[in-house]
Amino acid sequence: MSSSGKEIVEGGSTSPITLSRYESQKRRDWNTFGQYLNNQRPPIPLSHCNCNHVLEFLRYLDQFGKTKVHLQGCMFFGQPEPPAPCTCPLRQAWGSLDALIGRLRAAYEENGGSQETNPFASSAIRVYLREVRECQAKARGIPYKKKKKSTSKGHDESTSSTMHFS
Image 1 (cartoon, rainbow, N blue to C red):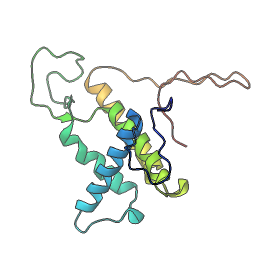
Image 2 (cartoon, one colour):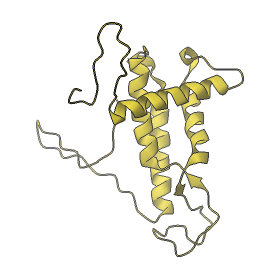
Image 3 (spheres, one colour):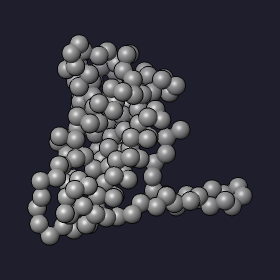
Image 4 (tube, rainbow, N blue to C red):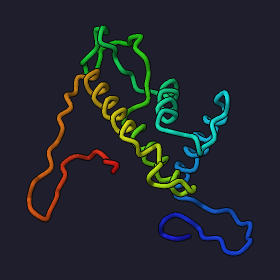
């Protein structure tokens, strides 16, 4: 097994490939997205997929989320650790969505999609993720402050842990 967690199979060997955790997640996410497109009526071929389909997929995933996001009218809105349960919805956590989009963006290009037409790299997706992050932070009472990049010449240090797509 190589250091990356992958086993290289040569020729027509039928031995199984052991993938890294990241590669396994990426493959699973790619298959899930493909199944989502196939389940649409009418089915959407990957070649016709655009950022709107990706946004619909992200909203669809919310029903399987485990992160409580308090609504504006909830008495626990803005409290990081509410003292009691409430009826606010569960959603996908921003960090999970951000990581998912990163894996799907890579999988799209690995499966023959061009970087220029990658719907997972769309500015609409970045805007959506930013809105989810800010909404979830506000609902939990955690102010989100955009961190500034240093302006030292020839050396760009970012204090932000946010993954940026370009």
